[in-house]
Image (cartoon, rainbow, N blue to C red):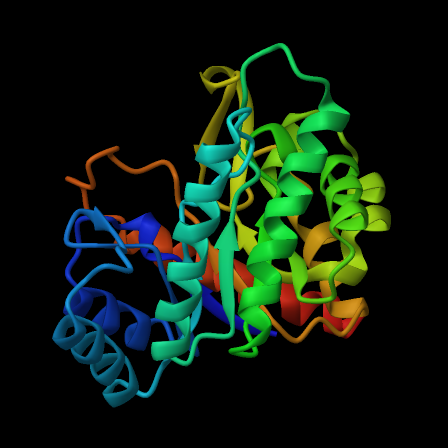
Length: 275
């Protein structure tokens, strides 16, 4: 199991700062989502693409995941078509960066269509993106997030999409926030997990839906159980800190929190291996 963090945890940092912190933390790679206060854009100039991948390689790291913001739960077919095209552009960016995975979301949607209908929309879009990604040997990872936060919902979409190039980003927090037990989530998605977002949250009544981001081991998530399941399953992908307790604009310095999360991940892995 390899350790990293997503640049979403410190969105205002330039790449050079991320590379320095990743080296300090002993990361094996870097999950790219934000740089210099902006999300990664596949329309960036070619020289910028090259400069990023060259700098990462010079630091002895790899780009393990390209974090797109693509979402597919749109009732309008034209909007879904645009989202598919955007996701395919991220696939092409991932290919230029030798990144094996592109993260996507199912998304949220307004009341009206049935869950089954929306599942069908998302599955169809995912399948189309995954077919395009096959050309590059890249996999598409649906995150347990938004309306698709539970393992149950992700499982339904994956079964409908029926494509081996689609996997899951297991975000530790969101299934629990939506009332699903770790047993339930794991049973439903464990064979398809290809990336993991590590975090802890506490049910305080504040924050998002009453949950607030806290330091590792300070919240209500059974982190030891979650990491132990990955170890026992011989999961060999990345486990990536996603720190959401930061300033929304990235005006603070989350280095200490990234350090704490990384140390916690390694401690939990070591403990699980000793059992």
